[in-house]
Image (tube, rainbow, N blue to C red; front, side):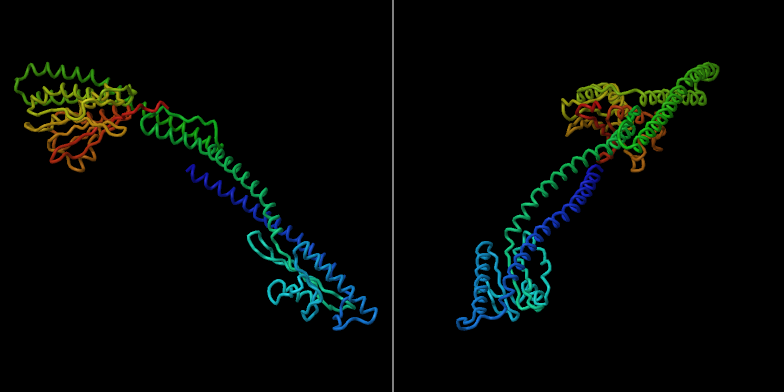
Length: 475
């Protein structure tokens, strides 16, 4: 989201700067060309005033009259002026009769063009109008500027003054003028990017804090809250609403846990008294009375369910005591503790995998979870089969795998295993409350661990406990 918002802001600011910069650059180039055109118009007007009285073609022989000699002097002056103008500025200039023949030109061999901008300017001057602004010549174009002015005598256009200017110096000046503009645009763009980064951070900081707090609450850290001190007012109100919602959720869950714990604790005393009365009643009945035995079994099962409910409530409420733990050593210890039970059931229980693996875990919680998983594996594995507990490490996780060769579970049962009070219909005759794996999951989740279930080949169940290998984030 930050990248998309930052890209949008930068694109908008870049668009604004370009929308301002391009017209300004175009106006600067147009102003420079306009300055050149005005100079050429002044030059053609001066040459037109010189050519105004040289309107007849020079005779083939030497002039005989004073007027003819005076006209020849004016023509010579015009030619000299055009020559010096060309030598000084490198601009081609000439005065041409209406039919296009040359009155005077520099260089002498230059003739008015028959096509292009020069021809258009010449035709416009013949109509008695000074040529308009030529098309814009940009710095990357190698164009020329043609300007023409009519030579008028007695109200008639008798000749045309035409200049054809190179644009190299003008284009160089335009580029020189554009350099400060480009530097200013680049500096403004850098400032815009810095502003966009700060603005994006200011807007999205509450969103990042909200996201982190939501993740914390989703993973069980219900005390996480948001400090609504920065950002837009709308996001500050959202942060306050989020904190109120989190307080309400924490209160409801706390009430639920307290109710389960209190109910479990309060029911234990009446249940103990009830079981005692049943035992007293059984003294007056035959020892092999099936009803009394069934009532005793159900009473003990109810007592076990209440104990597990109390353990579950405590597991969901107690924070994890994370520490760097030798997972392999702890697993070996629990396997050794359960081996007598497995031997009694005729099941081979063995440890495998790496011999020294460390990870971050709550040793008590991990031990309780391993006890529940190994207990189930031994309980449901038939005699003569084996249960293997394997410890492996890879990447940032440590995996403890408990694989048995029992009857296993179906796909639907795999999706439900670990739910509270759920037990497979095929195992209802096996003792248990259906809360052992739920307690294990709650204990592991408090320390950033997880538990998953899958089929074991060729048959059986494979339970994997995943633990973080690196230190938890203190934040």
